[in-house]
Length: 89
Image 1 (tube, helix red, strand yellow):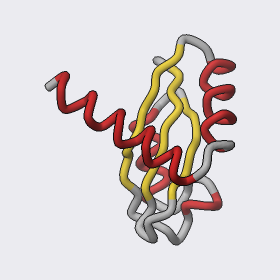
Image 2 (spheres, rainbow, N blue to C red):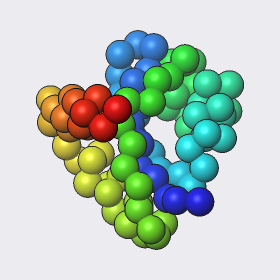
Image 3 (cartoon, rainbow, N blue to C red):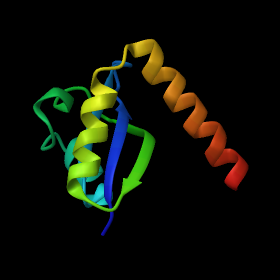
Image 4 (cartoon, helix red, strand yellow):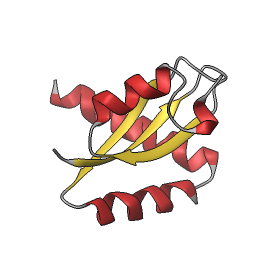
């Protein structure tokens, strides 16, 4: 499986950034209230950004960089990603 860095939009409109090597399982855990402490009580969550990496270290490094971005910068990153996904379809 690929290592991924992801951003979730929580039910309260806040954003959560994380990484995993099994995005399907991780989303399930977040939506069941068993994921990160931050997302508990903020579900359901929606996957709004995903970036794949070969190694865990790369995914963790990208997660750290995204977490340092401002909310405005994160929203721009998400918007760009979603537009690119529409073009690929």
